[in-house]
Structure formats: structure tokens, C-alpha cells
Length: 189
Image (tube, rainbow, N blue to C red; front, side, top):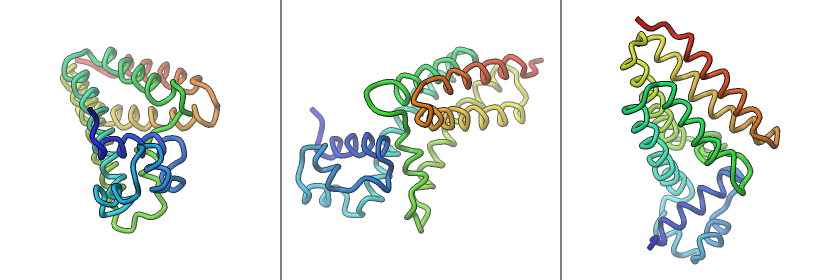
């Protein structure tokens, strides 16, 4: 059974993904989660920023753990292909418009302390580190692996945004072709 707090985090993740962080209020989160306004303030006394950090932690941990596991056990091409499959299924496919709640949180207009950007940066850093580690284990030079990892993470998130603008998965398919092609061109010993 899902706790009330978890329901609110899941509701916020979907709303941030669909409407953006700045376009989502506590009222919508409460309504989608099926709870009351007082409950959300009980679980998130730090307000919307605290809720957003919980979303980054929940969604980010789930995604990062999958990527880390794939990158630790699979050859690079299979790991990258699997990452792209997960993005196509989870962030581009389905009933909601293409989007990523972590990108929405990263782009929040009101983040004077940098907490939201910091939480997002930690998530993106985990992804980059996992991809880089996978490539280094395959014999790719550390600098090349680091550059490719940054390119892969940025391209994947950019493709999600482009899919939303384009109203199709075509941009992700183009990114898939480009990332896998570039992976094949990396120097190996």
C-alpha cells in the first residue's frame, strides 16, 4: 500500500512533468493525490521546494538505480540502448505528454538557494558517472568516456523536450541513432 506522502510525491512528479514546476500548485497535487491541504503541509513543511526535492529523490533514485545497474552489468551499446528504451517508454510514451519532472524542477523560476538545481545536478551526475564507468570498463579513455557521458545525458533530456515540441518520438529516434553511432566511433585499445 502506498503511503499518503508517496502518493503526493507521485502526483507531483506527474504534474511537474505535464505542467511544469512553476505551473503546478499544492492544490493540484492534493487533488490528484486524493488528500487534504493540511496533510501536504504536514509532510512538506518546507513547501513546494521540499516536495520538489522529494520528487527528484524518488524519481531520480529509481531512474539512476536502473541506469547504474545496466551500466555495471551490460556492454556499453546494450546499456545505452536500454537507457534510450526506458526514456522512450517512461518519458516519451504513455498517456502523458513527453516530459521529465526533473527537468521541470531544474528550470524552476524561484530557486534562490539553488536547492532544486543542486538536487537535479546530483541526479544528472549519477547518470553521467554510470555511463562513464561503463565506457571506462570497456576500455574507453576516461576523458572520452566523460565527454560521451555528458553528451548522452544531455542528448536524452534534450530529446525528451524536442519530442514534446514535435508531438512525436521522432527526435528520440534520431538521438538514438546518433548516440549509438558515436559510441561505435569511440577509440578502444
